[in-house]
Amino acid sequence: MDSKRAWVGYAVIRVLAFVVPFTLVMVAYPAWSFNWVAGVVAGTIIGVGVSYLFLRRHRLRMGADLAAIRERRDQRMQLDREEDSVLDAEEEPVETGQGRSETGQDQSSDVAGDAGEPDGPVDPKDPRSPDTPGDPDASDDR
Image (cartoon, rainbow, N blue to C red):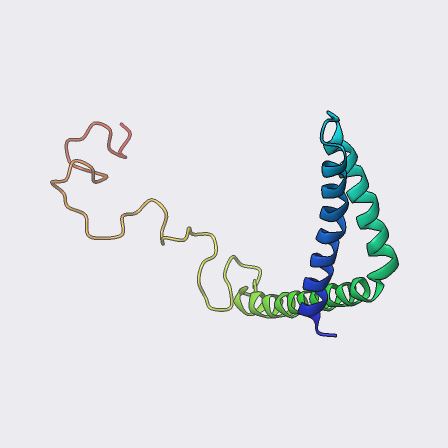
């Protein structure tokens, strides 16, 4: 039995097993104020009974499909984890114990380069630049 056919067949039969008794109760007791509650209860009980007694093959097939999907997903996740660990191991620099990695770069500096120094040339006329002459807030503490 094809998996889509099992899913569709199970869904259609379950819906019909609920709707038919519900409709019969609604038509049989139109004047009763709680006919909808009785219809829901009857439809649910009959739907579960039909599913349990007659749709065993469909339920087993759907369960096997769900298990296969879960297994494929778990396998892909395991492969992704292994690949990530290999890539992470390649990216991590090996510490030599002196604050430098094997590549010779100092690990204590921040990502942008030397901390506290501007990236480009310093314009002495720029009031935002550090050590501007005549700036009372300059780095020279007197």
